[in-house]
Amino acid sequence: MQVRPQQLNDALKRQPLWVLVFGDDTFLVEEALDKIRRHGQRWGVEERLSFTVEGGFDWAVIREEYQSLSLFASKRIIEINLQQKPDESGKAVLQELTQHPNPDLLLVLRGPRAEKGITNAPWFKTMSEQGIYLPLYPLGEREFPGWLARKLQDAGFKPTPEAVQALAHFTEGNLLAAAQEVEKLALLHPQGPLSEDDITGAVLDHARFDLFQWTDALLGDDAAKALRVLTRVMEEGTEPPLLLWALGRELDTLLALVTSGNPQGELAKRRMPPQRKSLYLAAIKRLSAGRLRQIGRHLAWLDQQFKTQDGRGVEQGLNDLTLAFFPGKRPALPVIRPGYVQ
Image 1 (cartoon, helix red, strand yellow):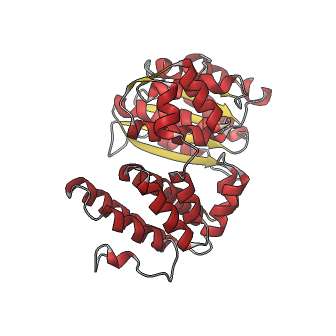
Image 2 (cartoon, one colour):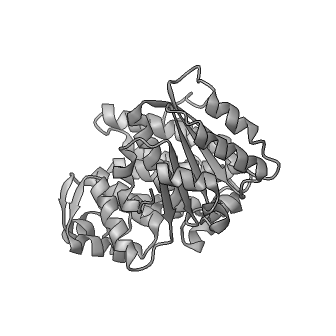
Image 3 (tube, rainbow, N blue to C red):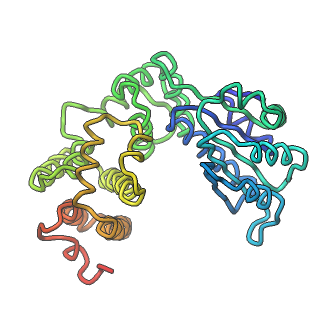
């Protein structure tokens, strides 16, 4: 059954055996996969296996995993990332799977936009008819507000059309920025009705320094500027949980780049302005994976301190974490908790 993105949640409630997600927009593909994984958890899926099909891939591994019983979980997901079209061996294996479906396993195939060489294959026709086929296309200017409205609704909001248009205007069609804004709203605003004033007043007041300017400064090479921006952001009343969240997001991205082995390729998958990509590339030249994990441990500790100590010490902690992005600067992490470095 071919479905549109807004129909995916309802289609997944039927617990299909196969889901085909094909599209050239990496963000939309990852968003769909996240929904599929969350539904899998509701079905009792406890194990997820992932395979990438490239040159010389051994399709016998897929056959073996699909037919085998897991020692650790009763239900599983197998995700296959098709970096290239299945060869003859791959076609045979996929066709074989359609003839012997495993009710305790969800098979998810992802790949670039499916061409006729894929969609006309017998295995594809069977899986798409009996399971779910989700073709994804880049969002145009007209489609973006609808996607954004669904994003807000999924987060528990009931936005007015004016609120959706305001958020669409501020994020300028950038899916990643829009998703981050929705996550920020979920932290700052109660679920339910959401007005244009909520958007412009609580989250997107561009007339002041905001947390994105702080995170940009963290990625740059000027420690003094990063501290000044942080001070200004806190003086203007930005809540510490939002600052900690923003810092955690940057750490996740930086760690993904540092550990990927191909930072340029990893950045190419992410929808963001070119200037931010340049900031990330500059930052990872001075920040090692070990340093980033160290910052992450202190971030987790500070978050716990904020929750259990009524926010005492959070301002100093954020200053120290800011300096931790600039190796050689003092004071640094040990100020937060002497002896915590592992």
